[in-house]
Amino acid sequence: MVTIRVQQQDFDMNEELKRLRAGRHDIGAVVSFLGTVRDIHNEETVLSMELEHYPEMTENVLKDIADEALKRWNILDVTIIHRVGKLKPSDQIVLIAVASGHRGEAFSACEYIIDTLKDRAPFWKKEETPNGVRWVEAE
Image 1 (cartoon, rainbow, N blue to C red):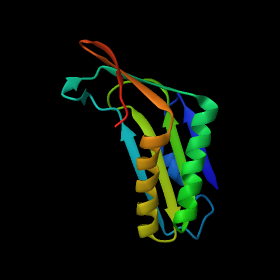
Image 2: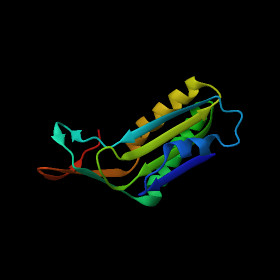
Image 3: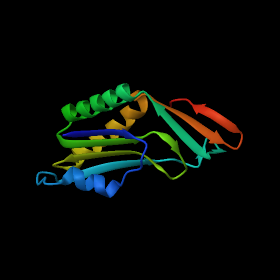
């Protein structure tokens, strides 16, 4: 089962990992990635970051990325939670959690999901700095 959520509210990583593993005895590994807001970007202080997205499109792209990972690796479950709205430094932005029977598959799939998400998911970032507001170009 794939869980995809795009939301403004924060999430509890421990609760999400418990939910992913609940009632499952076939899971031997869970690999997770937690992305947070940095207080510096391109050597400039970041006071806040605002993430915007196109709701239906964003969730469909995230689901497609998770489905691609399920086809490429022997994994059992995927959770992707991505926050939108205004965030401050150290706030959680994204959680990727991948469950599998063995760690190697989970590590590979998790890395693929976050790298592909950064490249394909339609999120737009705006940073507030001491010098004003700027849009951040995708890397």
